[in-house]
Length: 403
Image (cartoon, rainbow, N blue to C red; front, side):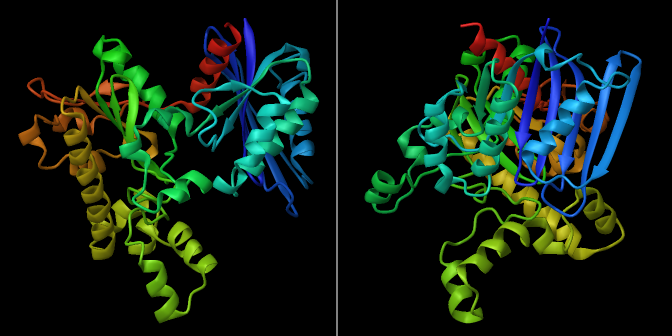
């Protein structure tokens, strides 16, 4: 048995899991938050046995990621509530990295050279890559003797053809500054695609799929013979579908309009489109549960927000059906995709003519496991498959370190 530590390091947080391989058992999961603020917090849930769950909460100032990781190790090795005796039990560390640019088409073992390339890609993800690098540097100091693996949100989409990833702007912008569509959520899309292939009882490289990741962040991917050939998120995680607080597709000239007519600066426009738009911008709420409750109570803007989001989803599904030609399955995943039957139904509304036939009873069932929700006569299967990015990272580590 091997134990992997999976780390997702944010600017003021560390999300982590300890997963045992090959059983794929989660031994502990936790979150360190408010790093660098006046009061920090760690919550750790350990699973030392199949019928036991032990929770630890620590509230204290956490100065930096190094102190945060020391707290993580302290709770993981705690004699009463820990799941490892000491750090020597960790066989490898996996890191979620948002942006690998064009340099990484797959997960990779972390070396000083890899870190240097990630630093060069900071302009592509200035809010995320520095935080990811903080987590990598701290983990390399604390676990110097074990393999460390970077798993990239962008890597799965590096199979897109040029016609899909290039923008129709002067080509020199791509040549000099790598302005192009990269796509994100790749670890999630790849994971649910593999699970879907298993349910279809087909090799992944024989499957044409549309994977629909709907959470606070949303994206959709067209997968041909197991490879991403188009995806909705672009150079940044702002393009594409309507999200919780992000606008998705807008007219690029909107920026100039807001500058000239309202006097907003570029930074203010960026904040508006990323943090004040999407569902929140349309109705003042970005939690789908609140939106459904408000819509049921007669809130017209909440109902409108649902309609706008699901209409955009439907447009993209239709577009990707045209791109793929043959579609074996449509897969819904992530918080909204897995748990919201109304959003799924509305996103597929009117697609019966293309062989997409949803079974309302199956769609309305609440189950936390992968399942088919299409009618028997549907020529395009419809699935709900819970995503598990931490497990996907653990599997990447296992594959990479066994080569």
